[in-house]
Length: 581
Image (cartoon, rainbow, N blue to C red; front, top):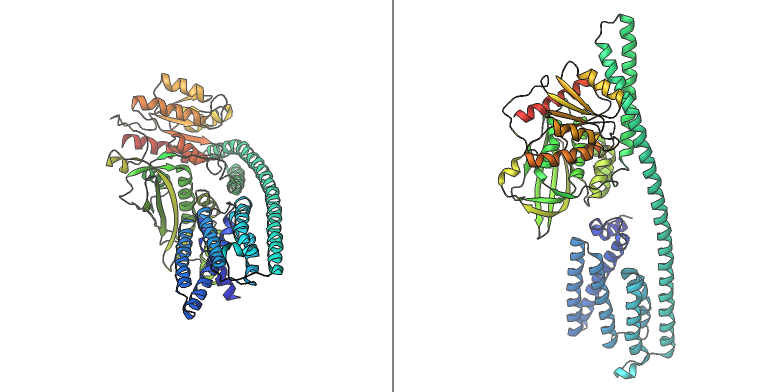
C-alpha cells in the first residue's frame, strides 16, 4: 500500500499549480501518470534497442525521452495543462505512426492502437480529442488496411484488420458517451453549486441584517449601563447593574460568534482590485494593533528593497489576512511582551507579473502538543497544512489566501512558528520618490501647527438613528467641546463644506447616502485642498471585510458596536495626536 501511495503522491505533485475549480484539476494527475509511464517504457525500449543494436530506434527513443521529460518539467513548474497535454498528445501520436510505418508493429501490436481514443479524448477533451482520434485513425488505418500503398513487408491479417476497425470504433464511441455523461453530471453539479451559493448568500445577508439590528440596541445597553455604573448607587442597585452588564457582555460574545461563523462564507462577495502601495497597506494594518490596548506588541517589518513599484491586486484581502493572522497569533501567544516578525520578499518578476513571498513568524506562541502529532502522522505537506489550519482556527485566513490564488505553509520548530504564502500581482507604476516607501498612510496629512486636544475638538457625528445620536452625545458630553450631528452622508457633506471639523464619527448604513460613499467624497474634496480630517467608522457591521472596506474607502479607524465609550475616546485621541505628529 505504501508503494501505491508513493505513486499517487508522485502523480499529484503539480496539481497544486492548478486551480482546484479548474476543469483540468483532476486530469492533471492522469497526465502525470501517462508521462511517467511513457518515460519508463521509453527507457525499457531504449535498453532493448541497445541489445538489438538498432541505432535508429535508439535515437528516436532518446529524443522522445528528452522532449517528454522537458514537457513534464514545464508542466510541473508552470501548471499549463492545455499546452503540455497537447504537446504530449502530438508526440504520442507521431511516435505511434512512426512505429507503424517503420514496420516495428506486427499483427498483434495494432490492437494496442485501438485504445488511442481513450487516452487522447480524456487528455484533450471531447472536441479536440475526438478530432485528433479521427485524424489518427485515417493515418494509421491507411497503413493497416492498405499496406501495399506503402510497400510494407508486413501484411496484416484480414481478421486483425477487421478487429482493429471494430475495437477502435467501440473505444471511440464508448469514451465519447462517457465524456457526455460526465459533462451532463458536471452541469447538474454546477447547477446545484450555484443554488447552494445562492442559498448561502441569502443566509449571509440575513445574518448580516440580524447582526446589525442586534448590535445597535446592544451598544446602547453597554454605554448606558457604563454611565449608570458611575453613579452613586447602593449595594443592591450596583448588584443589579452589574448583572445587566454581565448579561450584556454575554450577548456581545454571542453576536461576535455569530459574525465570526458567518465570516467563512463571505470571502467571495467583495472584490477590491486596485493599484496600491504594499508597504503602506501592511503598515496601516500593523498600526491598528500598535495603537490599541497594549504597548507590549512589536511588529518588526522587513520588505525587500527591490519592490520599487506599486501593485495591482486586492489590498483589502491582504489586510484581512494580516488582521486575522495577527489576532490569532496574539490570542495563542504567551503572556507578556509579544513580537511578530513580518517579512516580505520578491521571488520573481516579469514585465507584468511579480511573485511575492509573505512570511509571518513569532517565537512567543504557546506550546501546542497536537502540532507535533500532526507533523508525525500526516505524511504530505498539504495534509499537514490542512490539519494545522483546522487546529489553529486559521480557516478564514486559508480561504482568503486561496481566493487570491495562493496556499498556506506552516513551519514549526521547538521555539519558532512561521506562516508563509506566495501571491502573484500585476505590477503598477514605479515609485517616483523613495519617501513614498516610508509613509505609513496613503492619505495626505497636514501639520496645522496648532495642537488640538479632544476637549477642544470640533467633532461631526454622522448617524441616522436618533437614539444612537443621544447615546453618543451623552457619552461624549464631558470629553468633547462641540459635537455637530448629521443624519446621513449627504447632510454630512453639506456640513463638511461649511465648517471645519477636527474629527468625524461616521456610521455606515444610512439612508440617502451611506458612510462609505460619504467618506470617498470627503477624501476627494480633500485632495484639492491638501487637508485630511480623521474619520472613525462607528458601525453595527462586524462581518469579515467590513473593517477593510471602511479602511479602503479612506477611513482612519474602525469601531464596531457594541463598544466601550473609553475605547472610542482613546481612538479619537489617537487620531488627533497623529494629526499633530
